[in-house]
Length: 292
Image (tube, rainbow, N blue to C red):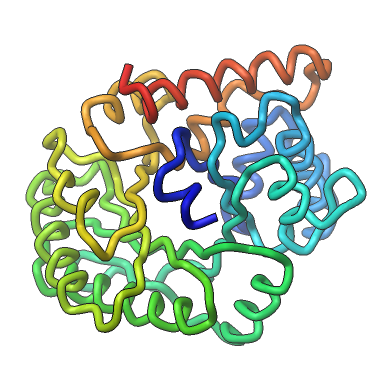
């Protein structure tokens, strides 16, 4: 799986909407909020959506390198098998979102909340065949100390993930709506480079970053010896805009969520659904692997 992630052609699908973002994801899919009466019903609906994606003929390892899962999705079934096993059999490497949301903004950033029971979760994920994790924090402003603090937190958590035998995707997202975005990108690049250079041993991490305001800014990270792969989030861009920005950044591949799912609707026939998903997969693949 490490060889596939490091050298494969394709992108990583982000199917990890959690409690706070699930209602919006379902509404985008054409299921309004009144369609469920409890959190359990809501999560069942989003699981059905994810299973429909995962088992679609358009969603295979030919163009999709990996998929990031919400914990409930990891623990569920698809096609009568555990979801990570279903993905692996389709040539798609499974990852798990492990962060539990964000703290309030301080020093221009939002750190991750504590993650209780982390080691047990990591052990369960590894037992299910999960390859790595993803953990998100957010940069709102170009505050040097704040950015240094979330990078330190990301690498501390990454060290715990590595110790559990998994590969972390560190995600210090820069808000693309920030008026200080370009400077925040540069401060983040500086902090990430210092943290990577200081890593002990020879283990590698992955990075998930916002598409930079300055194209190709993160090239040095894509070739750093401690980085397995750098992926980019869509950050609120539409799919055409996200793909256009991604194509300007050699070495980066997509890890899109909304931009992947934006044309999918619950009411579609299977033929319509598979065609829409296939078109999205093709567009993101071209921007990731072919840069066009």
